Amino acid sequence: MLIDITKCIGCGICSTACQEQNGLHSTQNEKLDDETWTVLKSVEVDIEGKKENRFVRHQCFHCLDPACASACLVGALEKTPEGAVIYDGDKCMGCRYCMIACPFGIPKYQWESPFPLVRKCIFCHERLKAGEAPACASVCPTQATLFGSREELVEEAIARIQSNPEKYVPHVYGLEEVGGTSIMYLSDVPFEDLGFPTDVGTRPLSEYTWMALSKVPAVVVGGALVLGAAYKLSKDRGEENEA
Image (cartoon, rainbow, N blue to C red):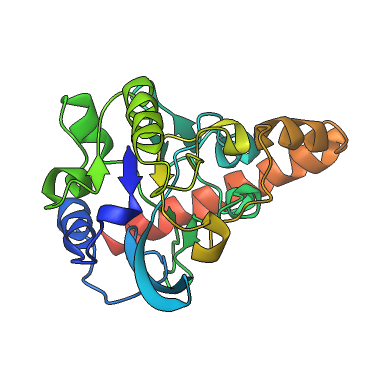
């Protein structure tokens, strides 16, 4: 998916579509949480001495090689062939390593739930499997959000920059960051001015995850798995009692 910030008018229809598609509670948040998977944030920027606003979409980047999935000890997070990074709550043991591993701070936790899950954008995975665009992209009135194959979107992004070099920052955010992401951005102001992290590097962070895990004694990992199994058992029993 390619998001052209210069075309976004801040209508918020994308966020509403996300809520409706995923059965989320309606919120007015400008920050992601367990019930808010897509948000629009208004950012004031300086354009040649004049104050203007840009609207920035925030949701999961669906990294090509996701650090969250590599950090998960039980395979609760998975990168699918369609590009989505999806989550299986039945496998999750609640360690929240995925939240620590994500360079963008995307996964959120249901802190107030007795049986909490990790929550985030799942790229409308069922729609993708059916050959449909994600809900947010399908409703954008200005085509600020484009959906298609990553190769086609990269070509489109580069073509826009080359045809309007005076308009766009000469960089496609997400093209190489953390090894590449499935959500990419174009902008007319520097990405750091919009709050994007620009120090994440171009190497997939999953490589660092495995390097770190290789140093962890097996007994520690085994202990975490045992605790996770105990947590899952207690969760299953609690859900049975509530039924």
